[in-house]
Amino acid sequence: MGKHLEKQIRGMMIISFLFLYSFVGISYKIYNSEYYSKNSPTEGNTFYVGGIGPGNYTKIQDAINDSNDWDTVFVHDDSSPYFENLIINKTINLIGENKNTTIIDGNGEDVIWAEANNLSISGFKIQQGKYGIRLSSSHSIIFENIITNNHLDGIYMTNSTYNKISNNIIQYNHYGIYVYRSEGSCFYNNITNNTIFNNNYQGIQMSLHHRYNNIIGNTITNNQGLGIKICCVCNSNNIYHNTLKANGQNAEDLCGNNWDNDYPYGGNYWDDYNGTDENGDGIGDTSYHVPGAQNVDHYPLIFPPNNHPPNPPSIYGPVQGKIKIEYDFYFKTIDIDIDNVTYFVDWGDGTNSSWIGPFESGEEISLIHSWGEKGDYIIKAKAKDIYDSQSNWAVNYIFEVPKNKCILSVRILQWLDNFPIFQNLLSFLTDRNIF
Image (cartoon, rainbow, N blue to C red; front, side, top):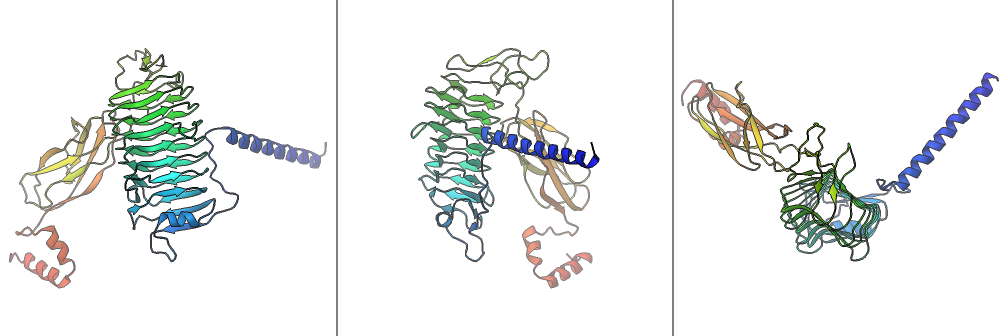
């Protein structure tokens, strides 16, 4: 066989392999419920709400009304809060600038009613509605939002399939997520990696003929009712790798569902599990019975699978003082998992507090410190939970021991920044110890 013919055959084989690989990959994506189509046949336009650009909209709904399928509506946070009740009935990407500061307030009515397919909603704080998001959709993604203080449900789902609800904070609603059959059943939805806490009733409730949904990797804590409730012929759903902790009751399942992912992948973390782990594999030696029927988590996890570090601590106290005088400083952090925390404080003078604690999440603590020399000192603090997961440093606090005899307030010093001539005069007087 000639070298030229051999190269041709090899080239044809490579092309055939790539074609087969692409076909299999595309077929897998279409089949797999993890695939959510957001790609348009052509690139859409972007409509801007808020901000200072020419032609920017002042209302989100006006931008949605003028958009077409596969367009993007981007919402700036400088005009927040937006007091609106949005209806989304076309395939768009709705994106907020910052989920902490781009606020949509429903004023008691539904904040977002999403009834188109292939939607994407992200980057918002969604609050003060009857429902935060009312979803009747397929192949849509709701991610990276804060859904809070809604009178009924944070997210209400009906007649929805192949959607992904991921990485949201869902708090202070009546129900966190309610999957209910009012217009149709819900199948093949993925509810993953959300933090669902401090809701007045259930964290997640699923009622009336919903199947093949996945509830995986969520942190479900401190809900006053049940962390997860499943009832009314909702079977063949998968629930595992969730952290269930400090709820009124962690779970109740009146149907038949899967509460683990077999060994060695394990089931869920239950704070009321009292079994042991003799072989140290991180999975309990005995099963956990899920209240309500005959459901069992065969492989309960000994440690939370999705533990969060505490937030960086807040630091309070005086901003100026004198040498060798002790001052009180106050520190506080929140741990989403409601774990106890310890603190480490760097005083900026080469000394530190070492790790002190444990303290309850949200508990304010006080520490005393003094400095032996004049100067500016940056106070840093961090926290860690009982699983040694550490926060970032909080580095936003400067304590000043002035070199002049008179301690001027920070406000006066900031005011003097606007008048260089006064700054020069003050420097001249203090250098000569005049006052």
